[in-house]
Length: 502
Image (cartoon, rainbow, N blue to C red):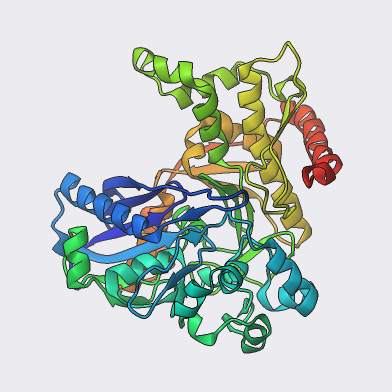
């Protein structure tokens, strides 16, 4: 058996594919892009078949760039964005574009179920509040609004399970992504038939639950032809992207915490005991025997991508001349502004907000602008606003009984020394940045490596693959200004939330 592992990450803006050596070193990596569709206000959709085409393209590119013999790939792990609702028929055809995690169309349905069944009872079973972002409401939305899709549906798949299906022809449901369903008993790790019936979810829609590292199939002849792989490579069930990122950052034990800096932001706290709080998100970890208590926000690295897209024309024009990307220039501009942005504060609720406020009507807000403020103030305030959202989630998690001392940061924003230091200063936590920029796909291949026996266990896998690049520690000299701005940050939402509903 070869000792290479292939990881596939189905993100919101693109897929990432990487081939790793057993020690975690990247042999080759490639991205594939696809579109997010916004057909109506509150809607956000993607086409799973576009994911598959992008994965195939990126996989072929990886194999070519790394001069890899596909027969040396011992296993494949797939992770993906949360809360998809991919309806497939008995032949495996995708019946509709899937609403993604930003989609809020089922808010009315979720409100009705919370009233009829009881929000407390739903939370008792699932460990999560029933809101429109989860899978549950989206599937029931099909029933009410797309009956032709609902009637033809054979199974509902999550993002990673769909790619696994395209690779293997096998339907699967990993235990980690099961948290998208509110008929999933979070504490016991099984489907709850009573809640399923109360919600009107057909039993046949729900695939059998597997451990994340379980081999659920092998690459088919057809998939090999499309992707450049070879037939017969084992594929594991995979997991949620945040859970794989948590694993790839080296988080395995109680209290260890990952800070997510991808398109979305948030935290993932590993806990070996069941801790649920309706303000947060709870799922099983990708590694067995523990959970991850998550804060998931809509405004992470995507905030800076939006800022660069809308306000970075000059920096993009100067990038070649200066030899620095527009985002690096944005960091430099923000770095010239004092901590606290001279009173400019940003609410990073760019697509509603998830934890801990659970408000689909929440809006992004700049506060504190006057004629003395510059683009640099707005860039820095946007970065600080994301960091305030991390602190807000940490505060709530600690109220729920979680203990957090150190954050392990991953995602694109972890490459910004300025932004990472802001997060350390604002949260008051030390931050460790692992060496790999591919923590999420690394987590996916750790699942594959354990599943096929390349690693003895998860501890060995983490010990072999995860190293530390740098550390950040909070600066006490800026604590006062950040504490003051954080209080205003919280107050702004409380005073504006009713206005945001109009």
